[in-house]
Image (cartoon, rainbow, N blue to C red):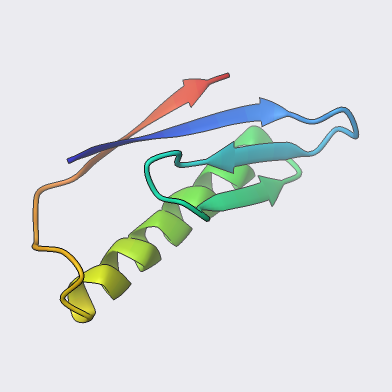
Length: 68
């Protein structure tokens, strides 16, 4: 399964990154890289939780980055 991290700069200067395919996976950072790193880590936690609770079956994943 492929996941895309979308990111953009907010008006206040913070960066926001999210994985639209995983509801709730949203993270802020002071740089684009920090926001994307936090979003990727959160996405992996969400996927691990789904596997541990048998909410989904294991599948190969790929994570890509895209500017909004």
